[in-house]
Length: 531
Image (cartoon, one colour):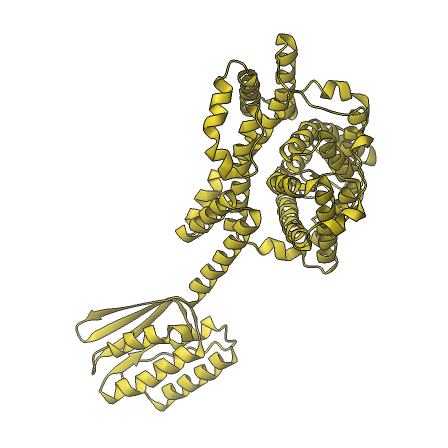
């Protein structure tokens, strides 16, 4: 873990930031291009977003060591927008989404995004990962992916037939994709020492590109214009009137929410990797809103804070925001200085990078952690994932949030009641939350206690009890005592549950209620009413 050292001189800091920026740049360049292709837009638009994320947002970011740029998690949504509304529609929606992020940041509600259930977040990332894999495998097989994940599954036999067709170049393209993934996996696992500082993505791209050139393989390569400025397409305000207002609102809200959630969760993860300045979440959200508005105005891709590039930035030794800024400068220099080299990169290689990223988004370890907290969280995770794959991001995430709320309500209102009987004594076990919604269950349990017996109420596993349940117990006690029975409760335990400031402990014996015990009943009732 990187530890912040305020004694480091400016010269040392600049040197470390410079070296870190180069490492991040080497990782970001192929990802910017690959994400653009996966999103269904020209390559230069992905590079343009990376440049803005570094050269512009790097100055105003609320998370100094976080890297902003095009995100794999948005490719599914962007592809859908471009397919339905074109590049002009994407620009309008992106500007609107950026303005929504700005409003949320100025309203200081960034922390709300950190309250989303991990089951929903992990389910969202898994759904995106599966969809990304299902689309990029078509690109590797020299076919255009379908607009929907289910269609990609349905037409998978067509992909197999295309690869086996000797009249196409699909088999060569597939081999390059396999080579790219193999190099990625081997380098990530076995590269040690100084070699580990070289991004696996860069090594994989170089290996695949050199192989293609050496063997003169007939595969598709990146189409990149002579100037990155050709990717700048300023927003056409006339196109707004031609779009469905509901479509603009729907996609803008979804894009703003998902981009914000991914950015702020990434920022929280980056904070765990270093001991430097902590993230200012509202400021970061404002910066992202400004960045996405700018990206929409110039016709680039959406941006978010990205955890993979950010973690590389931290582990490479970055100490300030200069590394993020410089990585954007290197992207700008590369786009102008080496477009010829970039055109040599096979499209199948970039698709393989995104396919590998998609698999990484499906985090099996996260499922195991969720299972440790109960199978219901895994169910929410699974439903969110399946809904995203079968419908879209909006439906999947919304369904996951609704299920999480239902689970919370269920947990907070569920009371488990059981009674153990030992000779002339009964023990009532209460587990969970005893609220007014639990009155029927609690009343049935109390009514089942035989007359002229002693009832002990065990509250060790009780999380909460409200006034209605206490009143029911006290009313039942009066009736039960009239039959010769008794009630034994630890009132001090209930006081601790309500965090009473008084430390007086009241205990009950097996004898009938005294005036002091009745007073304890009334006092506790007043306390519970106040709570």
